[in-house]
Image (cartoon, rainbow over all chains, first blue to last red; front, side, top):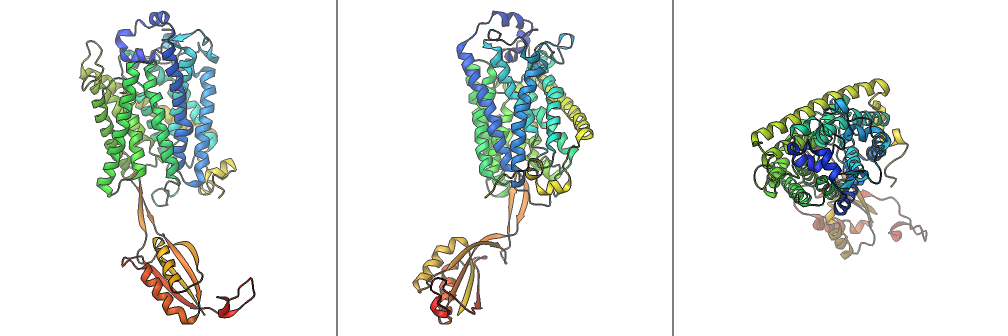
Length: 433
Length: 112
C-alpha cells in the first residue's frame, strides 16, 4: 500500500476499497475543486489551534498563567510542524512494510517524494500532508488543558514531541494510514479515535500522573477571562468545518453533509448543556453553552461523514448531556484535576461519537453500511476502535510521562506554581494594566 | 464639619447623586469597593466547580459637609439608596477636623 491515506474514500467504503487503493491512487487526476476546498480546510483547522484553542484555553486559566497556555499552543504548533516534516508524516501515512498494520515507515523522511506532481486521491500530496499536519498540531495541543497551570515548559515540549511520535502517528496509521483499524472497517471520519479519544485519554492520564493543582477544591480557580474563552470557542466552531467537512478530502456531497451535521450537532450540544445547567443550577451559564458546543463538535467528528441531520441532532443532544455529567463526575466525585476538562469533553465525546457513528450510519438518513455489514457488527468494530485507542494511548502516555519526569521533572515547584507560570517560566506577564 | 461615608449598591449611585444635588451638596468622591456585611457573598459555578465569592462590589461615597446639613444628607442617601432588600449598605458619620481648598488656601467650612 503506497498511498495509503485516501482518507475520505478509504473511510467511506473501507472494506470495499482497501485492496484497490494503489490502483485508485494511480488512476486519479488532480481535481481543482477538491484541492481548493482542502487548501481552505487546512487554513480552517490551523485556525482552530491558533488562535481558537489558545484563546479558549487561555481564558479558562488564572491570569497569572494565561501566557503559559498561549505559549504551549504556539510552541506545539511550531514543533509538530517540524517533526511532521522530518519523519512523522511518514510514520503516520507512509508504508510500514511488514509492520504496515501498526505503523508507517521512514519512506517519507523530510517529506521525500512529496513533490508538485504527487497526488493523494484527487489532491496534491503537499496539500494532503499539510491538512493532516494541522490535525497532528491540534491533538497534542488539546492535551495541555489537563496539566495547565503546573507543568514545566521543557517537560511539556518533551512530552508533546514523544507523544506525537509514539502515540499520535501510530494511531493515525491504524485508522487512516492503511493500518489495522481502517482495514477492519472502523468508521472514523475526522478523528473521534485519532484525535479526541487519543487526546482525552492522554489528558486523563496526565492529570493523574501530575496530580492536582495546589489548592484544587479549596482555592478559587475561576476562569480569568470568559470573554476570551467565548471568542476562542466561536473560532473553534468555524474552524471545525475544515476539520470535518475537509475530511471528505473532496469538494462533494460528503463534505456538504459533513458540514451540515457538524453545525447541527454543535448547536444541539450547546443547548443541551445549557439546559442541563439551567435545570440543575437555576441559571444557564456562558461557559456551559460554549463547553456544550465543544462537546457537540467533538462527538460528531467521527460520525460527520456518515450520518444524516436527524442523527446529528441526537448525537449533539447526547453529547451535551453525557459530557455534562462526565465533567461533574470527574471533578466532583473522582476529584481528578483535569484542569480544563479535556477528558470528559473530548475523551467521552470521542467515544460516544465513535460508537454512535456505527448506529446512525445505518439509520435516520445515514450514508449506509458497507456491503454485508450489520449495525451490530459495525458498532462492535467501533467499540474495538475506541478500546484499542484508549488502552494504547493510556499506557503509552503513562510511560512517556514517567520518562519525562525522570529526565526533566514534570512539575514546577510549589513556590513557582503559586507565583504563576508566566513570570516563572517566561519572565513575562499577560496583563500590565 | 462632618465626613459622611456611605456604602451603597452600585446601581443606586445615580439616584443618590441626584438626591444629593437636590439638597445642594456641591461635591462627592466615589470609589468602587468590595466588601461584605449581612448579605455575605455569592457562589459562582464553572463547569461544576463551585467557588464562594466572599466580597461583593459596592460603591463608597465620601462627602465633607457642614454640621448643619448632616441630617439632610443622611436622609437623602437613605431614601435614594433604599431598596428594602439585604445589601443596601451603610452610612457612617465622623468628625472632620479640617478642610483646605488647595487652589485658594481657604480653610474650614468655606473650603467645603
